[in-house]
Length: 282
Image (cartoon, rainbow, N blue to C red; front, side, top):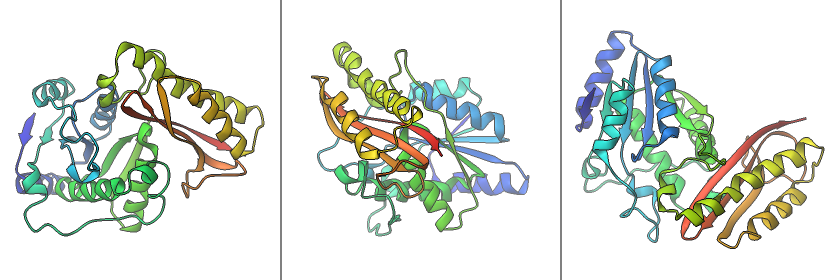
């Protein structure tokens, strides 16, 4: 496994692999890897000749009051985990190389970025789509792997790839969960034992909403109200949103039909967690 810090070096390697007709799988991460990331890596290793993982905590997707400075980092631990899984290259660029002085170009998807997480994090997805498009240009992958936990992010990136005619297959992989159903996240380390127990209300509520729909409920607003009540009944939880949205438009649904995403974001103590469930509803 090789650690690559220079962007031009990564691009040179990608060109060489293209000449050799090697397929490149790519897993973009912000590091502090957990089992969810590693499942993405394993899928990439299985499905491609070469696997590249990026470790880059992207400043442009954090708001001024968010945890960019405190976001957990442990490169040596990450490298050990990736080495064990036969990753070929780890891209670890410096912030000043990704966003040099005078940087002035951003990629913004117009649809679906001002709802759900975009409502409370106004410039978040502009930062996400900018860094992902830049990483795609550095790595030039055939396939890129994302976790379903970040469902809105995946759907926005897929929109960007389609709209900009990027020749990349974006792959959504099932959410990895801790015992009890809590979605794995690098931010889970912030939770106290009591908060970790309280956080189980998120997935528990999603599973109830799924059951209500499977039993025939088609009123999206009724499901939303019931989910809100479930989250607010947990004393350590502060609700950001609970929604049933179309996976095509990311707009809330009054009538539940088609490919949908049931999504929740909530603060458990001071830690913001997200989770979702996907369904096909006839």
